[in-house]
Image 1 (tube, helix red, strand yellow):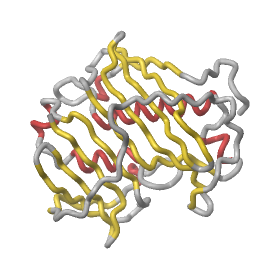
Image 2: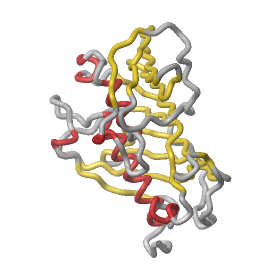
Image 3: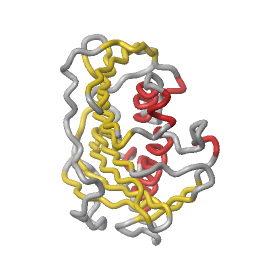
Length: 245
């Protein structure tokens, strides 16, 4: 699609928090927070002519590689939040996108994401085939700390296994990025979720998993941190680090 006349290099989009997105305590689920962030990023890409549909002409798609989310507070049911997003950098096959969530004038969440351009035929990264010079790049960061490479080499205990089902798949035919987070959080102590004890979390996406793949969900607990690794056979596909208050 052509660049929208409404396109701006910094997008601000409002979202109403509905009851389907909330935990029993009435606060937004961490998984639905990630969905809102990705929907905002997707809308910005669509307005700027680099959406999934635009990229599929060249058999390309954006694939999330790393993500860091810092949380001051979660919004709750019936809140209206504003998500602000901009591109920090975009070179060849790699891009850093920043996002901030505001409740009124207060910033309550900061997020930075690292994306790769992925050829959906060859299943390999490659330079973006579409023009992007109209996106002004901003060096401003959205989080206090950058995303990192998560250390998952420590001894871990297996919490559960999961076989990937149709409901786990996304439009590029692999497990949706938010599903990995969901599988891990399902094994976290309920009190941590209910009492909003997660100060920040980071995710590393390492290898895709697909329909009927069976994965092990492993974890390691240390002072104020929980590290998860989702493993298929002998290779880690996803790592999650929860920083607790």
